Image (cartoon, rainbow, N blue to C red; front, side):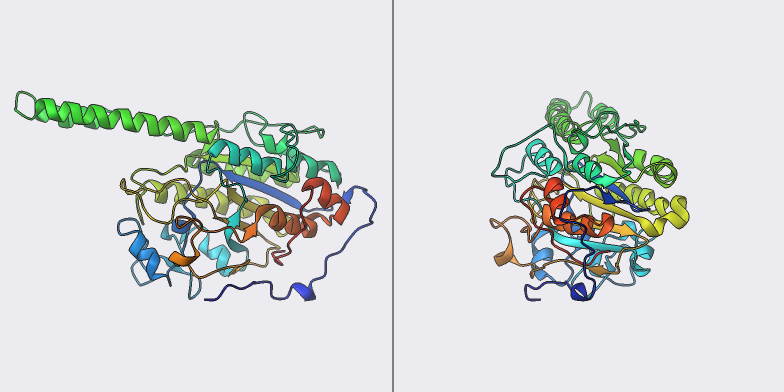
Length: 394
């Protein structure tokens, strides 16, 4: 597959530009829900490059099998991409109905690979080489230029993305199933070796393991920034959908627990369980929104992707390019959108990560122009210095 743009039909769908003056864009019945996966989820396990032999060479323990009759294998999307089987029942039907698209090689040009720096950078939506205003997030600026905007943060604290001059209320979700270390099983195994020559080595081994796991859990918890867990999101998604349907047209929720350095798993395991919970929560949104689903767009992003090669702990480390999810009743889905490149060693970024070919400000700007009818001047407020890149997603 050669590097190419998937921008078909863009020319036949002209943008409805507003006045050049900076007036509030007409919101109509349009709704946007922005879902932020904190911790950098492994995009290569969500959207599997099944046509890449390099993928299978790089992940001997955590690769998803090529599509087959086996329900544990990737779900075929096209000749190049497959979907994690944990989403077979929840989100794949939306893809088949044309209400879900994915944009691979998506992300920010920030290469720090720091959870906190990259999350802040993405939420501010400001140029990397310009002045940084940590008190101004791009969703707040969007709310400021959309006429009759009614924003809501489904978080216990107002995140950077909603900081700014526009007043934004927030409501906390139940934070369930946070990562934690349970030493019960380690103690049971250690007791089996009590009064034997192996007792001390086993105790010391588990002590080291527990220290490492506590450190990793602490990092994951910090990277999540008190975000609701995937399980918590699954349980609260219907409430979010109801509130978006009846009261709000710009929403934000963050979901934590995606920093999978150790024991990531493949078709089953830690990551598969999180994707399953997230998928079921997202699938509940159209059910709750009903007729309002056709005017709603749900965007799912993460601060970065993860290393393409697995690490020594059968996990993945902080990477670069990721995959954006776009759902909605008006989404032109059933496809993999945006600029793409063959997945092979030569195309990795710094010989380790997916590259970023679809810069997030440009892609989100193009989507928001269609969703809310933003003019170029209004887009310049939301994403200063960025030019919208219309992928024809809505």
